[in-house]
Image 1 (tube, rainbow, N blue to C red):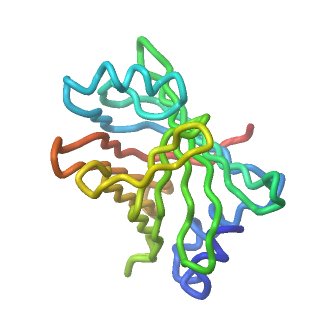
Image 2: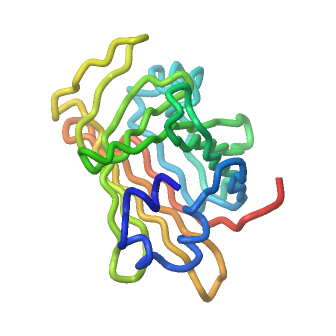
Length: 202
């Protein structure tokens, strides 16, 4: 829905399986499960902050390999009757279950996706979307803000997390693939995970 609107004619250049995944009609969630081959959190000195973030289903301190996870995307109408997509990502570490949730809407005037991270949101990011030559979806972050209750404060570039997401489809393995990187110029990697998943019944 919102992604088809955002990408316009480029939506048809996505791999057919990604087109199927990102159409997301209202009331028909996309639910999948898979494995993250690798998850890297941020540096050790950020772990206390990441533990606090877990209370709002945002970043988390754990690292691991071959971590089971699930993802659910639900298209719905928000209080302003705008179409939005709610993202629920759940990572099943041996000692803890962590979530990384977000809510996205579209700003057609600025040609960006508005992404509120956390539940309730702690951070906001403009997202720009494009389609690669092989039909994968490329997502990159732009301006970001801290969310403090009803107030949003613009973050200087040095404090932002540069986000790059690539989602594709492997025709040989018949799986969706995902690679997410969040990087800050001052402290380095804030989060990275890479894995694959397949749709499943709810």
